[in-house]
Amino acid sequence: MDGNGRWAKKRVQPRSFGHKAGVRTLMSILEDCFDLGIKYVSVYAFSTENWNRPQVEVDALMDLFRTYFTKQFSKLIEKKIKINVWGDKSKFPDDIKNAIHEIENTAINDPKGVFNIAMGYGGRNEIIKAVNDAIKAGIEVDEKTFASYLYTTGIPDPDLIIRTGGEMRISNFLLYQCAYSELYFTKTLWPDFSKEELIEILENYNIRDRRFGKVK
Image (cartoon, rainbow, N blue to C red; front, side, top):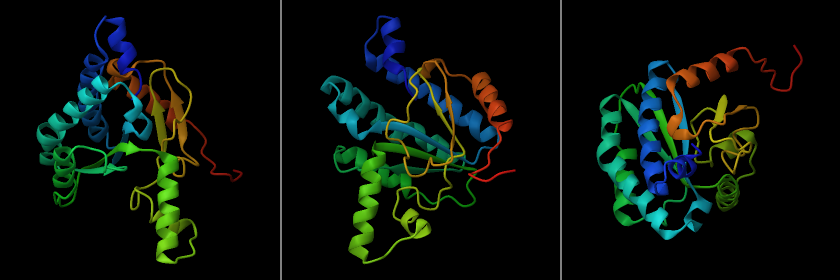
């Protein structure tokens, strides 16, 4: 969900203004995705590298996480959306860790959809963690058993990865899982991303020929 800071800068506002707008867009797009019948939606909310941003911006993001984990995301649970958080949570303040724990452990029977949030996440770190966990368990892994040590265990690999903001790279997101994902890059800054553009991207995805290394 790239482009919040640049969106704010265009409006002569602090980066936190863009992040707030970006979260509003997220909540709207999530509703659109689940209404369209998309079962799994995963977003990259905060990377391992984001801790290196200016403290004032990190603090503003922490305040957003507090608000949404304690108030807004409960609305998703009421709509039977299961929420998972992927990443190293150890550096987050205790109140945010507690809120995450409560959200993740809320039982939902027959969920309408699954919302995955990558926070304190880095694809390389995830792979290294999985390798070390398998070594500790004394297990020789194949693709199936290795996948069980990833944050995404039990979740299908992404069919489509969309990056907004004009950058054309993965930026350490789901490096193992995206082996055969379709990629779509748009110049739209995340706060301006709309249902109309989402549908246009899905229509583009639907006409792609996915061979998974095979010949048709």
